[in-house]
Image (cartoon, rainbow, N blue to C red; front, side):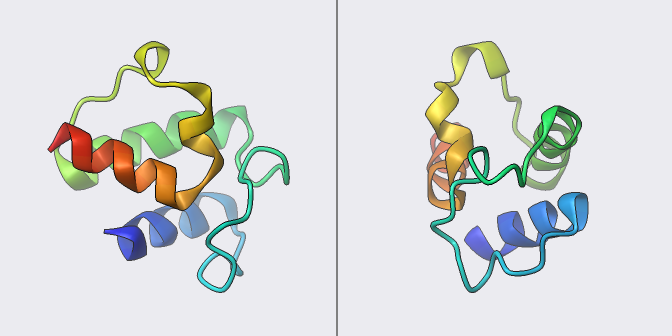
Length: 76
């Protein structure tokens, strides 16, 4: 699952070192901006057939691939 999430983020942002640096803070390092964030939610919903309510997800969820993966697992 993490591999799919990494691929989605890399495709949306153009950041290609995510696989080697999975623990990087996606927000602090400005890998995810507001537009990429919206596109990420849409892509995750489509890829994993889930519905994500951003207002019901803690903001820290979007800081790492691991946290995003945990969110998706909880929604499956």
